[in-house]
Image (cartoon, rainbow, N blue to C red):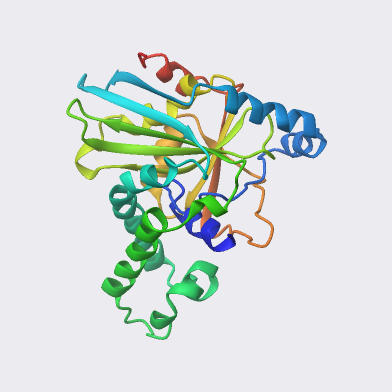
Length: 288
């Protein structure tokens, strides 16, 4: 389970994919206190809201060049029979997107191969190569790890009460252009959700599709109050995009018990609806 969470963390948006099921601390002390004092009844109420929501739907929208796109979404638990097929449907894009993010990170921080749990377990064969690393071999290994996560892992064993919100953006012919995955678990504060993964096809980038995907959560679940995420510190393009959408640094992120994120390697960000309306305004352009 911890292994799966570590992997998804890396992915987590940064696109992001590999942080999938990791918990993050709330950004301000006041928010941390809000979680500590939150009752089980409040936690249950948030999950009840998610479970009572419509669990599948679609929007039409236009990219920043006015080209039409379709956003299809669904809310799934890991035990749903549609969970594994949905993961497989985005596997190729996720593998491409997250491999490049992780490779870039390791090329700038090769020492992480001996300190990050994920790499200690999976890149042992590359750790004693001095300064002449086999980057092609490392890239292939990372791609294999990510691909297996989306295509072969049995997620039904994990987080039965957790809910994943998948949103896939497509062209008019049904071709996949990008995706985002949001995550809600019973312990989250009312209105909180986490972005665990996002990726855009290379040929579809710079069309504003990422912003459309990120904003879609406000139409899927209108009670959302806070979105939080993490990504590699080297993923500067994604960090800049998040800032432009209204995200700010989460100064006090929650660490997953048993796995502490190195702040030299990760950046944590959050979006609060009481502080900005950028994504809510973007969401209003989506047509059901």
